[in-house]
Length: 116
Ligand code: HEC
Image 1: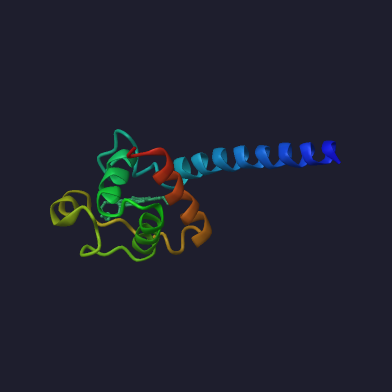
Image 2 (image 1 turned 180 degrees about the vertical axis):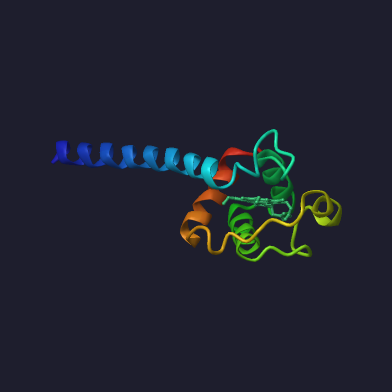
């Protein structure tokens, strides 16, 4: 019994680690071409997380706002406002790029790793 439980826990822990690593890779592949530390195309992940957290500090609100924005970006929704959008342009919709579940995981990755 004990050994089965231990194996289950090990497997679970391992999948969580793999999941976290996958999300980091996914962010690198799908978001970092714009949201890179040294990017001039879009604000860095740190700047994005700080700006969204300033308005939506709770994780659930942060996630809901970001998901809605990513599916349907609009200037009036953006936490950055007009000046930033004139500078960077509006983010393109990720609606047909990635499934909603993946977008959600990427937003949570942003929340958990940046803007602390
Ligand atoms: C083609 C470039 C591009 C890609 C790819 C991109 N973004 Fe963005 N993103 C932007 C720009 C530019 C802004 C800031 C201007 C704005 O508000 O639209 C932004 C803003 C944001 C915001 C803040 C919302 C707000 O109010 O402005 C979040 C959150 C975000 N991006 C997350 C992501 C995630 C997660 C990914 C990967 C799935 C991603 N972005 C992919 C260009 C991009």
